[in-house]
Image 1: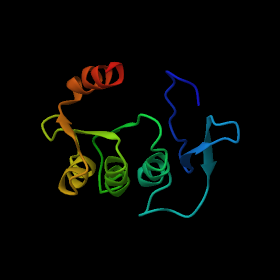
Image 2: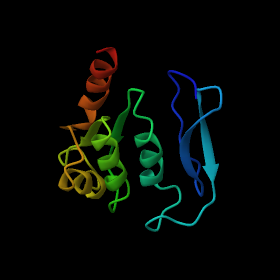
Image 3: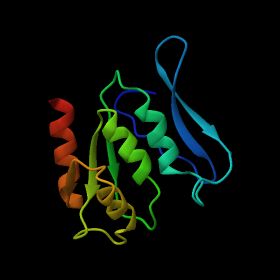
Length: 125
């Protein structure tokens, strides 16, 4: 995993962040069973990140159908990560953000256009 790089799970594969023996991080892709009907599953990614409490973590959940990601985001928030959900006002489909908000897994609820600014503020401290 490289700083300043965005990784997107390919269709049909779950993505996890794993610690390497040298103390760095790597992406693990798997074709494990569907999770809540999904592969990739946001819950699986967020759960893998929740375990790494020794690093700063920021999670964002945006427009989408269903509740995938809500439970994993709750684990991240409970483990000390900062969490953001897109507001209903700018979502095309409010399912995933709503589920995370209802689970009280979200620190900030923001319009789509405000998410990048908030992330920059948080990362820069």
